[in-house]
Image (cartoon, rainbow, N blue to C red):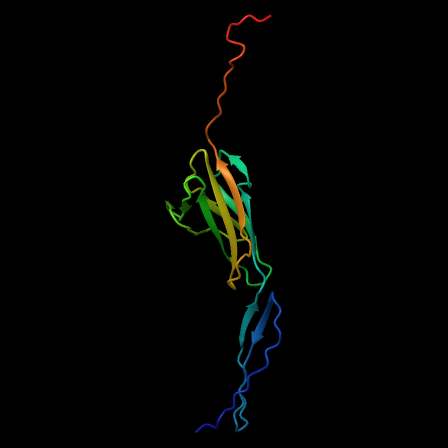
Length: 173
């Protein structure tokens, strides 16, 4: 038979965000046998909210070429970024890009990369405005408080003009 053990919980100190901690346990039973502590477990304590930016397209811009949406993400909380979530909305139809098609109803896709991220052109249509929202999420599940929101218009139609006055071949005085 084993001697009865007593369990005492250690007092947890105040934790500081962006720090890595080591948790170990050591047991002592009522017969005064003491366990040799193991290596323990490390963990990151992270309460800092990550951030993201959209580098391309520029907010409010008109563009005739946008092969990729690009941006950056940062996390100062120590757990590192997990993903950048994007919402891509067609402002004319109100449809959202779900990764393979434009659909009714909110849809989110993940960018490729985190600190420098990209997302391929989903198939822009000429003369249509789009909105892109980017939200950073870190590995501690902290989510960017205020997502980045940019709008742009995709325009590949060349403008046209003509001269109406003076009339072709007119004589002016």
